[in-house]
Image (cartoon, rainbow, N blue to C red; front, side, top):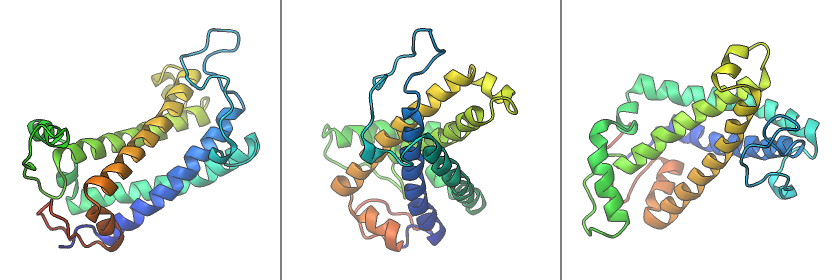
Length: 219
């Protein structure tokens, strides 16, 4: 069956590359001042406080280089993300992707299946309820990342937005932790694809799905 539109596949892989670059350049920027909070005041909780992150995980070489890469990749990422969200809205695909209250019970059933508490795979369409929950969460996380990024980038011009997040340092704090939520999502996502249902990887490359789950076609 045909599972993913070509636009979905292209934006997916472009997003992978762009987010990887944004994270790596962001970590390079973080190295310039690896604390959160006002100078002289107790820092915000941070497991990485004062620690040097490995060079292989950073992009840019120094603060100016990290900033250059971050701002260079920012606009393509916003364009790609906006294109994908527009496609979801115009095509109606969002109905199959967004987590709804009616998905709570199926999500619990799917979690039981993954935990091997039940043997029978719950019925699902294109995406199961846990996938919908994860994808909805990552869309919200992406929105949070963009807004906190803008609040940090333009704290004077967008002072109202910066204040919404509690000020510059708090906006920077949440922007940083969004990075690790993205990393955590990626690790779980890749694990589930490779271990639970490898056919979804082929579907995201060719568009064709030949797995044993998901019985709803899409153009």
